[in-house]
Image (cartoon, rainbow, N blue to C red; front, side):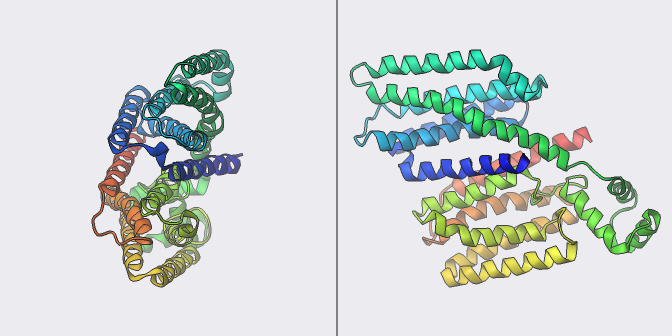
Length: 390
């Protein structure tokens, strides 16, 4: 179930941002685009205050943005002529989708009600709101000069309902699956106790192994598992890290899209770099030494591919890999804030890496810095909330 939910959520995320790329975001003018981004930030802040969580607010806002991205593509495909009033429907649809998501998340996490009960108990009221919005859109579409706005509002209401069912719901279920993945075995619990009390230096591993009645080399694997599951501090590059799987590809693909590059072709160098970093970091799969060696070989392969692409892309791919490895090093060294800083810069550097495949990044936009800042805020919030609860 978890794999299906992950593929569904991740696939829809990529499809949504591909829709934004193909639609040129509904032919928005720059002032309107800036206003939309500010509006998106505002609903994110509101969601954070109500849900008391950056992570849950991020899910609500992202799901609403996915709704609008598909709406933008439908807009371009349905109406070849541009209507300046029509994109205002994006704001209305974003708000409707966000409020639906906010209600579901509030009931699920704040009121601690099971997801299926939340849906069953609120299905009629949610359906009424969506149908009412569709009828209002139909009435608006019949007015002069309001056709595009009304039709987009109708379609957007239906998309908001579908994104709640097929996008937000998998994100919520994955939250539970990731919590289950963080549970420890009995030996991992004992190793955690030893490490918290005496440290994790290699000269202590023989003593830990003798107390556990296990092989010395297995202690490294237990420590890797503890770090990957977040029980020995921060590890941004853990395969269980929900944020990593969404914000890293998003940053890279946004860079490619900004340079007007081919998205499908650009995925190969990213896949090598991303997989190499994952294998180098602490994980719960494979033996530590084998996984690290595999990761380094994949990173070298990504450098080779970037070299064939061009010297500029090689330079920024190397920067991204180095920043990631530095973050992993400080995570191993328990310097968690420094590790989070470099992990955040890694996300921002992916934007530049994707951009550099197709254009020389002489004058960079503020977007990489925004992505870096958002990532650091999310990581810092998660770190301090988890440290308080532990």
